[in-house]
Image (cartoon, rainbow, N blue to C red):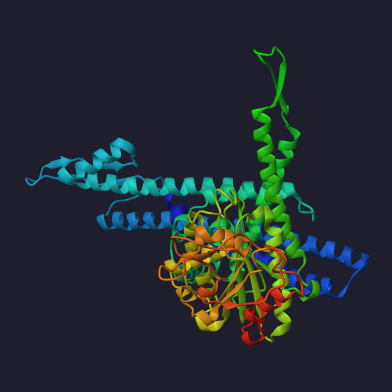
Amino acid sequence: MTVSRLRDLRTDTLTARAADWHTAVEWGEHGRAHVDRQLLAPLREKLVGETATAAETRLQLIADNCEYARLQTGLVHAALLGLAEELAEARARLRTALDEAAAHGYPVDDAGAVGYPETLAEDGSVRQEAGTATPAAGLLDRALDGLSLVFPGHRETAQQLANTIGAALQRATDTDTRYARTLRELICDRGIAVTDAMWRDAHADLTTAATSILGIADASAIPSGATPAENAAWWAALTDEEQAAYLSLHPAEIGTLDGLPTTTRDTANRAVLQVEEARLREELDALLRAEPEKYAYSTSQKEGVSVRTVSDEWAEWSDRKGWLESQLNGIDAINSRFAETGTEGLPEAYLLGFDSDGLGRAVIANGNPDTADHTAVYVPGTFSRLGDAETDIDRMTHLWRASDPLTDGEVSTITWIGYDAPQSLTTEATRGSYAEAAAPLFNDFTTGIEVARGGGDSGHTTVIAHSYGSTVVGVASQQSQLVVDDVIAVGSPGMRISHADDLGIGREHVWSMSAGTISDPVPLLGAIPHGGRDWGGSYIHEGAFGIPYVSPFPKPIVPSSEEFGAQIMATDASNHGDYWTVDSVSLLNQAAVVIGDYEEVVGG
């Protein structure tokens, strides 16, 4: 890189090329949405048979191509923008140094060397001969900088300028080399079929780009620990091209930001889902090809016989295999919901959260909550996780179908597997620590819904909290004011509060549904660790089979207790998980609350 080349560099040509690639990014994003909403949805709703199935397969292939193209062109777009920005910064530093050299009358050659005249002493003698300063670095650079403070003269000033110019030239050279290497790696296979191998390559490209593109979409600028309103303000302040760059380079981080538009989070999380699915399948395939010996053999010293035990290596292998299969089952459930869009009028699904680490996270909306008049957020309880997402997704699909015909408004129902739920009834579900950790996540998510749709008066939100999920909501209400209109506690073991008014939304908007001790013993069994306590209340408890007994401690109060003060809803559920059966009284009662038609709720 020479002085003249960097000084006269036109970065606007790079930004113009980036704009062309941005057009391709938008084409991919809009193309996938168009295929999903305008082509696949009507096809699934109106046509059946072999021809319809073949057409759906081909259309889905086009949608996959659009998404793949969006992801890959997005990386090129971000790279060109980053290159332009970094080179512009180097050019600005160079021009500033050149202007200063010109002001001193110092000539600068194309390699960055700075000429300087002789320096005279006070008596007119030559204290320092004229010469040329070339860029220096390291210890010499720092030594000369210090020298200039003690003996300021033309030589020291010229040396500082030469160092600045040299640093600008080196930065531009390094930037050019780094981006050239990155762009060379962004090569896609030809062909219309988007294979797992291509998605794995896309994941590698994303990792490379995110670490090498520094001039735009700085990861450190993404809000961390901010409120949903602050997240939304940060996103709104970005230009369209900056938003596109963040979506391309940091989809996992953008997808988690409560308060951002639903369509933005969906775009980000779908990209994460695609590349993560390919990565997990690749790992599972490799694992299955490398199964170790299941049994280890040893000779018992006492009996003198051979003993067979499961080897530690195989047990570890089996655990990893089970985890991978579980996470992929959850991903399959999400993809199946995407594929159901349009079936029996089911709206488009939006992926508001996804993470495969640990128990995994999955937040799926039927319909767009940003535009919905009525939104339901389902908080599942013990045993919920990504691997078992199918059941929870189906429950909110059933609720959408039950609610939508009852209103002229738009309905969105959301499955919020957004926290680490207890995975054991005895050792984990009895503890409140899971709810304590989940509560701020729940509050941020529901606040984010309100922010994204424009405020609290722009829609009606109902929380349906099942089992331990109701404990989460109860704890959340004590950490922050709930920003929801109604809460339905279903099969609740207790909310760690003693009265419906404690939720802060008015007892007339707190509902309870419980199938009774025989069909659903969770409210009885969970009352001791999670029920509220009214020290001025009853000390008579209900024991097994409804037999009362006196205790030295107040009776624990759960939402289905009369003392709690919730609106009791009729239910025909036959067990703890049976509250979402199609056409059931339980489901229709929930639907009536979701659309705000309280008079249609059948009391229990």
